[in-house]
Amino acid sequence: QVQLVESGGGLVQPGGSLRLSCAASGFAFRMYALGWHRQAPGKERELVATISSSGAIINYADSVKGRFTISRDNAEKAVYLQMNRLRSEDTATYYCNVVTTSGGHWGRGTQVTVSS
Image 1: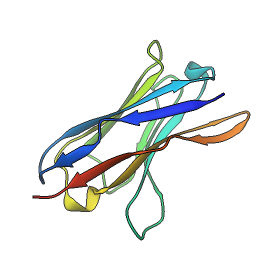
Image 2: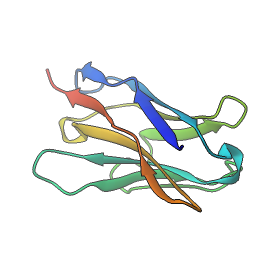
Image 3: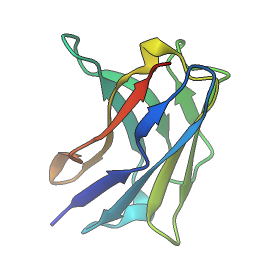
């Protein structure tokens, strides 16, 4: 059974930083690309960043380029999202995602609120 558990969200002031973690289990972690998505109230879920199985190929949404960094640790079966220079518009619930041979899987999300 695929499980993805996000953590690390919270309340932070504009300009601050947070590091999100996603602990994975139930699938061959090192074989799959993973992604971080987010959904703000009243908006559709959007892709934030993706990382290939080896970590060699990384993509970011234009809105987070230069501020966010995605990484993974295949030994720990975890994927991370380092978020710097946070803005109010980054406020959202952040979700970890993987698409395996059994379909797409999502965690329950972790809330990030950027506010002074």
